[in-house]
Length: 338
Image (tube, rainbow, N blue to C red):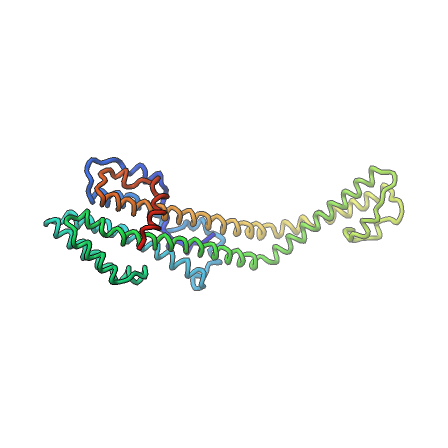
């Protein structure tokens, strides 16, 4: 499911790319953390290919509620990824700026304090509690310790992002159902024609079976043919025992009906195939988009864990960005969130 307008949704090209970029290092520093963060996020696809939404694009109306919700949540996701990149770059600037560790701590505390209005509103946090966390950051003696003190805020922000991703997945499901309904309505006549033709085809095949059986028995019974209505010329069905000629006449009639039905099927086939392709397209785009959301969720978990490890003094970037640690981190974030 979902459409070209979900082009706002950020997608990531996979975990294999992440793993190969995180080579071990003998020096732990914030610059390496930022470099690896950017490497992890550099393979972003900002657009779904137009080839993915050839049919369903015209059923997407960005002014309707379901579409607006998807677009809003996707936009929030994109902005959240952008904030992570900007935060990481700012950390490098602070870490490499001239001056004492204490000056860097103060600059970092001021930087975190600048988030207050946005985070307090977006995360529904107690502003006094946020101020207390910033004050604790200011009390630290070095920048890495200040980063550790900021970890509760980072955790809470990431958990909010993950919850929004869950909302986005649900919104995509609702939008897919809605678009399925639009497609069903658009092709209602074709669906009805196809169903009738299928019913008719099996009725005619059943009549052919009756004729075939009649050829093979000494006492054929054709009463069911007249009663079924499948023979449009009931006068050709004999009352008594049919002759070979009468059976051939009935078979000819049935073949004529089959040929006529086939011509009608050929006429509606392009529309029927477009209808089926539309439904498949919705399913495929929805599945691909949800997969991208899952990748973003993994990236968030890996990144926040990397931030925590880096701040704690772990020296190996390969250990910071350990993808296998993400599932456990999901549980820890839930317990440690403010």
